[in-house]
Length: 91
Image (cartoon, rainbow, N blue to C red; front, side):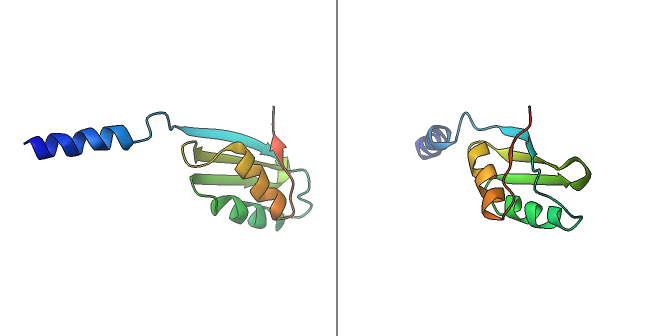
C-alpha cells in the first residue's frame, strides 16, 4: 500500500498541472495557391503538442489546437516561417 501511495504521489508531482489545450488563429498571408495549405498544415502538424491544424486558404489562416504544456505560439509561427509561410496571431 505504501508503494502504491508513493507511486501516486510521484505521478501527481511530475504531471504538468498547468498544461491546457489552447486554440490560436494564425494569419498566413503568404498562401497564394490552393496547394499552400498542405505545406502549412504539415509544418504545424509535426510540432510536438499540436493536436489539430485547420488551414483555410480562402481566409489565409490556420486555426491550431495545441497542448500549451508541450508547445507555444512562438513555436507554431516559427514552424510556418521555416516552411516558407510567415504567420502571426490574428487579433
